[in-house]
View 1 (cartoon, rainbow, N blue to C red):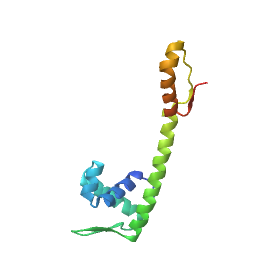
View 2 (cartoon, helix red, strand yellow):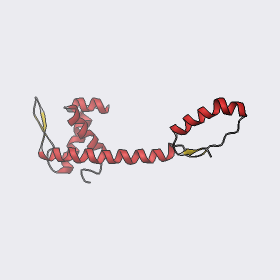
View 3 (cartoon, one colour):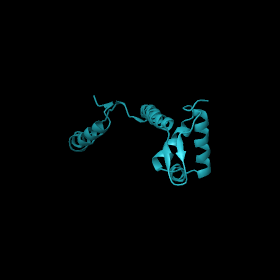
View 4 (tube, rainbow, N blue to C red):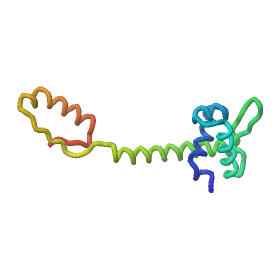
Length: 127
């Protein structure tokens, strides 16, 4: 497996970096600190190098860590955009709207509601 095959490992790494520590990253992801530490270790093994320099008081990115962070952000952004497009195709209203109403209701109530509905759902038409 390569470093970028398992997106959960990238999310774990990015969470650690953005939160500033493994324990804070674990809280954000709602997992245990040992689990997040193992995910970081797995990602570093797949990269074949350390991504973070750690000591008792601070943590900093290695050169490879900077590259993985930038590439990880870009990759996750693309994955999230693709997922959003996929979900939108199933949740976006589209088609033709036909409504039958009395003249009085159509003039005073329905016209305003239909106009607002069409503005909120641009893929719907009312011929």
